[in-house]
Length: 123
Image (cartoon, rainbow, N blue to C red):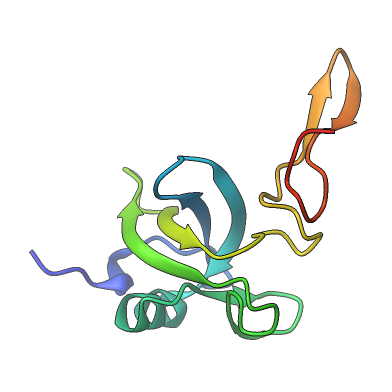
């Protein structure tokens, strides 16, 4: 059965969320948005391509930072309204220079930052 990005369920703006996860470690790295064309570009090139809502344009992860995401596998959730991109991440995934965008935990009602920038280690 061939895959058609048009069969996905996009929101009113023509977008759906895509979770990027390290294909080896399973670590959740980031969440961004894709439209049908970004999905197609990602599948055609193997370079994860998102839609920037703030800039209104495509962005290939790592194009300016050098921290590329190579697609290993794209998965579709059961409702077809969210994607999971299993990736090989080169360098940090977060624009704050951390390995993951999910570096803040809520513990006992307090926000705790647990990933250091650059090194990605625990602080």
